[in-house]
Image (cartoon, rainbow over all chains, first blue to last red; front, side):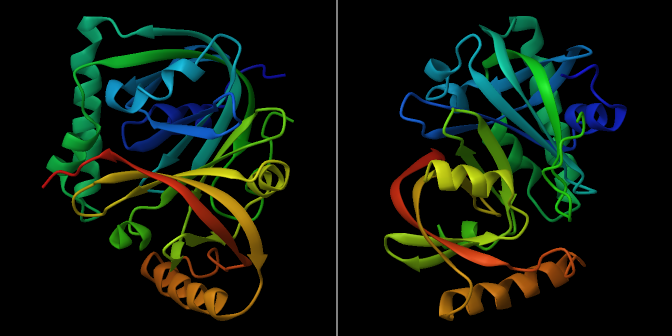
Length: 157
Length: 128
């Protein structure tokens, strides 16, 4: 059982230069993946994930309350990565006043990756949207995911 | 699609356990085998490998490094290879990729997972 998200995990989950992904599965046990625009921390064991609508279409029917879900965040500069696993608390459309904030985060992410040779404009076009889904997740476990020996180790063991 | 398999942008892979718990990981290399098969590099997989043995369904997201065009690929795991031409080619490519990032010690190939592609969908059509 998770008491609270470690500080280094929160940093990687919430930094705009992290690449963040969410996974769940459909009724046929086929894994499903969506690229997230960002993650925010609600409290010590609850996070909110924002999914650009264009990546959420197929996923939304599988995002139901209490469904198991995993979220992976990887720092694009250090490769530090963590995966959190838990259960869905709620799924809602984002409030309109928060859309611009998500678009700004995506723009910043693109600018960071310019240093690695990617096109900021193309990254922005790929990930930005005019609508987002907000998925609230109760986190149960946190795993080390950095590519090294020991990856997959449960941090809150 | 082949540029998206060259690991400039790491591919994201999801697997699901028998009881429906998903797992995500980055994959260093997705190798074209033939028109119906790819090979996935096996390096640090723990939970993913356990899941694949319980449920062979795999979903991957591949990204073109220039246009950021994205594909979703549904795969079914068929066999694991520890040697042979596919393994050797992947090992050679992976060594080159790892050298680029100064991470040769971290990127040792343990095996190649041969998977059949069952569906490929364009998620985003690219920025160009």
